[in-house]
Image 1: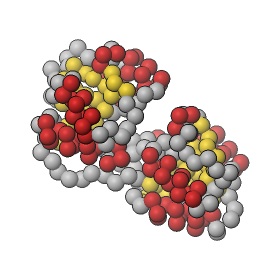
Image 2 (image 1 turned 45 degrees about the horizontal axis):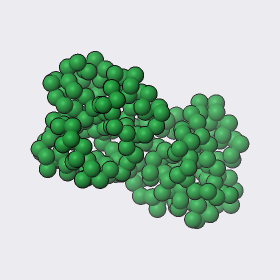
Image 3 (image 1 turned 30 degrees about the vertical axis):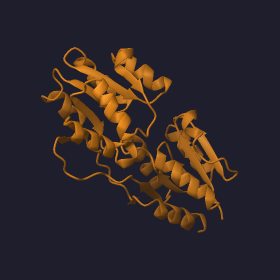
Image 4 (image 1 turned 30 degrees about the horizontal axis):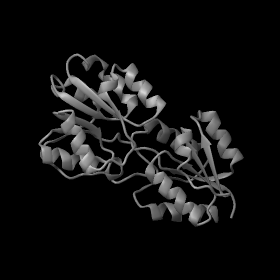
Length: 256
């Protein structure tokens, strides 16, 4: 067996993939953006975790020094720039690429409004005079800065310095911020919405792993509208929602 897999991490699924690679003694280099995320991955001689945001030259260097033979992209469904960069680099270095995409929730539900992007939300008649819970990641919160005086906005973010700083800079006061690390139970989700007297929730189409299914169930129970920002459309060379297929892909190219 020669070379290593480049696993683009940062999601719970990427951790599951890494754990199975470690169990199967398949060498892998994982890239993540934070040291906190790095602690979630297996501690194994066959594993390396690279922390930080890599530019194109940094990634090209990683491909050479790590003797990468194939790429598994298990980044977040909304990390379009990361995926597009990985696809381009894999192509230019003639490396096999496989995208793991968590399954999408496609069922139609009363009270759920699907929008293709944040622009449609911000320019439509959705937020005005509402008590809105935003569960969209801290990087999108600045989009709502101009709405701070036209609606009562609450933000749920990850418990990290970057997330908190981003929320405060976007105009959210401490009493309008809550920091939780998923998963969040339906009981806690419901209690939070009731405590803040939420009348509208905005989330991303993050699938079951991202808690979307629970938000849908609580929204239906409480009769609160849920706006779901759908996933960006990216054309992937290969794609799967089956982790076992990812392991077989890795095994194939590591044994080639």
